[in-house]
Image (spheres, rainbow, N blue to C red):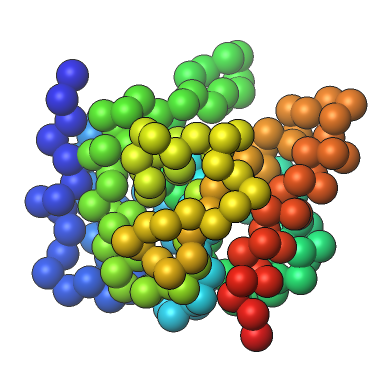
Length: 206
C-alpha cells in the first residue's frame, strides 16, 4: 500500500510553532486514525543536538509530548551520564503517530512500516531545517533508516560518527526501549548507549 505522504499537509510557514500546530491535521498515512494526537518534537528552537526516536508510545500519545514514558526516562538518565544537558537537546520521532495493537486493555507498540516512515519524513525534514542542529542522532533502526537510509545499520555503524547532509555531526545508537528489554544485559546496554551519546557530546564540545 502506498501512503499519500505528509508533504501536502505541511504549512507554508516552517517555524517549529507553525509545524507543531499543523501536524495535528496530517493525514499522510492511516496511523492518525487510531492515535489520540500527533506528537511533535520538543526542545530548544535552535538546539545543537537533535535526538530522533522511532514513534510516540502509549504515554506520549496520551500526553502529547515525546519521550515522557519509560524509554524517555532511560534516555534522560543516559544523557545525564554522558554529560549532556537534557533541556538543551531537541527530542522527536521519525513517525508522529502511535502505531499499536490492542491486547486486553493495553495498547502494544507496533513497528511502523517503511511506507509509514517515508510518509512522515517531510515532518522530520522540516524539523531539521527549522532547528539547524550541529548533531543528529538516530535512536534505533527505524530512526536510522528515516534519517540516513537503509545502508546505515545500528549495530554496524554505532560507536562512530557518520557523514550526513543533515548536520555536521551524525550518529546512530540503540533506542532506549531496547535497554528496558535487555534483561540481564541491561547494565551493559545502558553503558553502551551512554558511550555513544558521549561520543557525540564530546564532538560538539562546549
